[in-house]
Length: 196
Image (cartoon, rainbow, N blue to C red; front, side):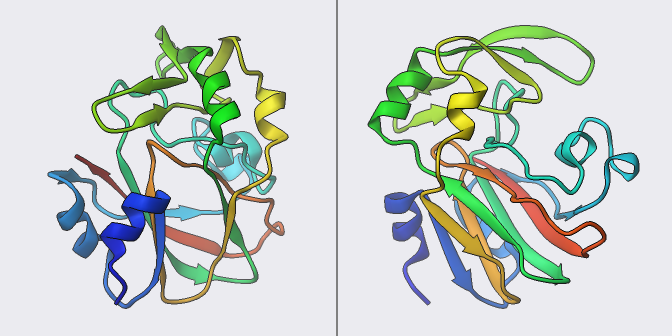
């Protein structure tokens, strides 16, 4: 197996062909992680209204980072396909220097599930990384970058899902989105969040 930790550190993501489960990697990444949760493509009426599917249904999801409303979002996101009823992918976006500068000038109005509002930066430097926060359903830009400007960005990588793959994504560095899927197509990914 490749040195996945080095690849993750350099590229911000690593895609592996493996039979190992997400929890096997989670324990090597951080001190705390969630149990596996199944993400199922579904129409708006069948989905939690708070979720991306609840807002976009089978349509394309926007660029986002997971846990953007949280004070401490998960650092890593681990995904693996459980069932693929057709061709489907996940797109990744590593912000270039121009986008990084724009995000550093952007303030977001962040609204959580119960309606509390805070104002947070779209990018903040911590001790080791420039950390991005973005989710247009819950984080409305008030200054700087607009949602339309972000959505015009082309992916820097596309993961076309195959059985036996596992994707580890640095949720601080890389934004992601799901292209539209065919209505009724069975698409189930397993997801685990990991905190440092």
